[in-house]
Image (tube, rainbow, N blue to C red; front, side):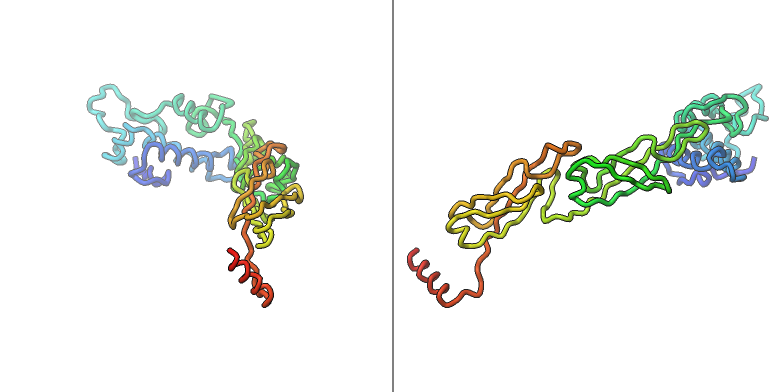
Length: 298
């Protein structure tokens, strides 16, 4: 038997862990399975090679023999096995997985098989059901778009999908829409659609989870003497009373005026207003004189 570099076939290093080998096998088997590539004449050959490689280096004992003996790995210990036939089939290896074992493993990876006769591709079933491909999509929204739950049409691979956008969704958050991905193969389940949200802040507020923060410039006279100001919120303007002697960087909390909780339109966080006292510039001579008088009085 000519030497085959099974590590190269699976695209892994010789130092790869068994978990890494298994992961590489899953990815390549799904990619090159003939049922998924009906128009690719090379798919069956590639799939069989991947299958063969996994049955060897995917098993710890077989891998040890293969690493030590290369193409002669199957004959390790043959002198102690009287009566053992050397003419075994291509996919039955000494100490390797049986057809039934491999079919069971393959079923756990790709789904229930619909037949058990033949072993057309080097494993049990001739018509394996595959879950459809999962699809990743990104949806750009404005911050004001996610203040309330609403419907939105998303175009994926030329197909329009009507989805519900939950209130309070966050930037970078991803949701799963089961069954909205690629079509299943041989009656397998459809894949899933994963939508990642990119939220662009089109407001004057800074958002942290379900709380909002806003800076408000307060004139010196209102800060000193007190008064009333109008402050913007997501629900419109509200009137606030400013106590006399309000200090720079003072903070006021407006309970329930923040951002909605995820999927809860009516439950909101708080809005925090930070006062920044604005010092007047370009004072007239009379104003400067009045300030001097105030300084003298203090």
